[in-house]
Amino acid sequence: LLTVTGGTLAFLLVGGGVGSYLYYEHLNDNLKVIDTGGAGGGFKKDQPINILVIGTDKRSGKGNEGYGDADSVGHADTTILFHVSKDRSNATALSIPRDLITDIPACPTKVDGSVKEIPGTRGTRFNNSLGQEGRDPGCTMRTVKQLTGLDVDNFMMVDFNAVKNLSTAVGGVPVCLAKDVNDRDSKLNLKAGEHRLEGEQALAFVRTRHSFGNESDLDRIKTQQQFLGSMMREMKSKETLTSPKKFFSLAEAATKSLTVDQGLGSIGKLTALAGELKDINPKNVTFTTLPVIDNPNEPANRKATVVVNSAQADPLLQMIRGDVSLTEVEKKEQAAKDAAEADAKSKQDALLQGNRAPAGDVRVDVYNGGGPPGSASTTLTWLQNSKGVYKAGNHGNASARLAATQLEYAPNQADQARALADMMGLPASALKPGAADAGPKTPMKLTLGADFKEPGTPLGAAAPQQAPEGVQRVEADKAVCAK
Image (cartoon, rainbow, N blue to C red; front, top):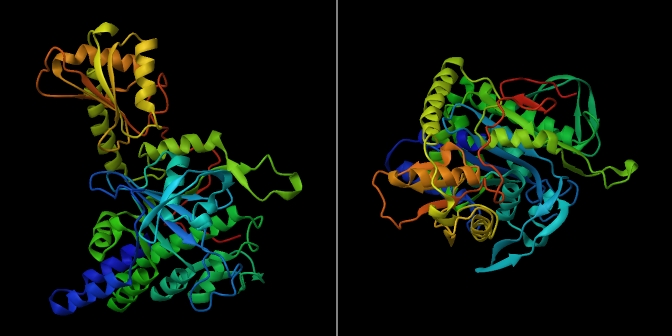
């Protein structure tokens, strides 16, 4: 994602005229685009952004045949969910372990112009969400949404060549080794100390699994995060920003390496995304990893896979869904943001103050805009049978997906809205009052969002403000030696 920012900014230096237009078309032709069948909604201004960055283990390209499984169709080998805050002051890069055991949902995939429904698979490695059984990146996007509860807006996918070409285009990526390394599998052979890696050496560094830590994929993730943080610093350095040659090289390397969804399928769209990211300070970008533990269903001497550590993962994911930064953003900016949020919360809380209508007087139409399948029907049954809301109706799926449940009502329905909020466990932020009064038999509109789990489960609990103790993380501005 960060390499694309540099590459698209490179295009902006080209200027106007026929040469600019031709170069624009040339870069557009470099991009590979996949239709993911609605797996992502596309990033939007003034909203948080979630981009899925997928590094595959596909061995295509010159010089890559000898790496591991030469016949690999390309799986989700390195996967990072890049969450950019609504105010664009910070970002969280969440790595998802390739060997995580999870459920892969059914997903529609386009094959030769027609749509094929690929069945879901329970209890399998996460990296099988791509490539296995013909799955495309849309399947990985759907798997990540199911796993994290976060809507994925777009995806970007790269293979081995991306690491080699981009590290070369930027003039090498500085890394630090705490010890000598000679890994026969990845072919990484370096002395302890600082190095500037590009091409084959850069690829060997991010691929090595036997050089650092306990030789697990989790420690390789840390090494990859260190490399990406260093690349980010290099791209934001004066030496890169003032070098048109580097910018043009980055534009070529980035676009030739990229496969994207239709929402990012042009230089114009990538440039728009770059504009949303360009002002984020590396010190406010945090790399972290979805917390996991060894798979308890495997023998102690054959630990090869992991499962989610819910005690740490749940609050961490709640923070990301709540758009809470894992870094210390500028205190002045944060104070202003906190004050504005406190004022907005005070106004929202006032909506819950006042009378409640009897359950039998509550009129509401229920729509499913992001909850589990059948949520509108189960909610209707629950309201009628358990709460006495007999004037409720099920209207099926909403016209658009919502991240959070909302209740729309007229001013003269405020007492009904408060009563329904109490029953459903809705926070004040879910209440959306209109400007004009409604007719005596006009229902309110309840749209269940992606935060809805089941009737009777309260919504909108405040996100934690600090990451759980023990969660691995590192800021992008920190140079860390691989151990």
